[in-house]
Amino acid sequence: MTVKYEPRFQRSAWLVQDLGRASALCAWIQEQSVDVSWIAPTQRDALVRLAHYSTRIEGNPLTLPEVQDLARGRQNLETADPARREVLNYFAALRWIWKRSPSRLIGERDLLHLHKLLSQGILPGSESGAYKTRPNAVFRGNRIIYQPPPPEAAPILTRSLLKWPYSRPAWREHAVIVAAVAHHRLVSIHPFSDGNGRAARLLESWILFSRGFDTNHIFALDEFFDQDRERYYREIQKVRGQADDLTSWLEYVGEGIVETLRKTQQRIQTLRTQGPETKITLNRKQERILRILAESPRLGGGELARSLGMTRSHLSKLMKPLVQAGLIKKEGSTKAAVYRLS
Image 1 (cartoon, rainbow, N blue to C red):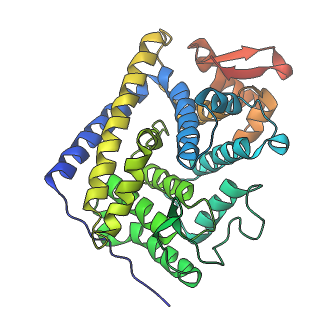
Image 2 (cartoon, rainbow, N blue to C red; image 1 turned 60 degrees about the vertical axis):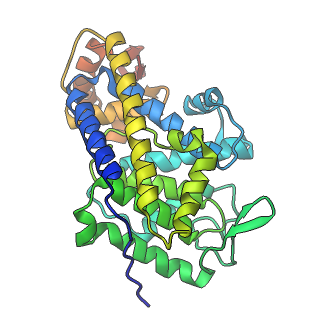
C-alpha cells in the first residue's frame, strides 16, 4: 500500500521574512569558514547543546556542565545510568549523521538505525530500531491530548514521509521548510514505542545538513525549543487543531532558526577575537580532522590516521599547519604523539 504525503501550509509574510533573515545569517557564517579558529569549538558546543536540550525536552535531568563532561569522555557507556545513557546515545546518533554524505538520501533503514542508536540500552531490543507494535498516545497529565495513527499504519506513513523531501515540490522549498515539515510529521506519526520526539528533532537536523544549511554542524535549534517547552508542545498541537495546516508551525521554527543563527553568529565573533593570529584555509581532510577531534577529547596519531584512512606521514603533513596555527595541540613525539584541540 502506498500513501503520498503532501503537506499543507502557506508562505506567510512573517515566514518569508524569517527565511530571508536565516539565509543571510547562514551565508555570513559560511563566508567566515576561511577563518577556521572558530569551527571546532563551535561544532563541539553544538554537539553538547543539541544532546542536552533535546533530551531535556523529554525530561532528562542532567545539567549542561554534566553533559559537557560526558562529551569529554568522562563516562563509560556500560556503567552509565539511564539519564547519561540517553545523552551518550544522542552523541552517537549525531556523530553517525555527521559522518554521512550530505548527498545520500535519508531512507527508512537510516531512520530505523537512527532510532536504534538513540534507544540502545534504554528500550528492549525488540523495540529499539523497530516500529511500534502497540498503540501509543501523547498525554498531558492523565489526559490523552493526541492519539497517533495505529501500529499498522506507522511503516506506511513513515515511508511516505521520507519520500517527500526528495519530491519535485520539496526540492523547490527552502531547507528550513522541508526540515520543519519532516519534524512535525514524524512526531505526529509517532512510529516508535518511545523516542519519537528525539528522532523527529534529529531528522530535522539531518535534513538541514543534507540540504546544505548546516554544513559545519554548528548550531543547535533544540535550545530554542527547550527554552519554552510549553510553547513547543503547544505549537505542535496547534497544527492538529487546524486541520494539519503547518503554517503556524513553520513560522515558529523560522523564528527559532533566526534566533539560533544569531546566537551562533555571536559565538563565532567571540571565538574569532580569542582565536590564533595565524589564519589558514582548510582542505576537506583537515576539516574532518577538526570534526573528529571536536568529538573526542584526545586521540593518538595512529588511531587518528586509521580513522581517516591514511598513513602517519600523510597525517603529519596535514597536522603541521593546524598545530602551527594553534588550532591543535600535539603532546609527545613520533609514534607516541597524542592530539587534542587547543
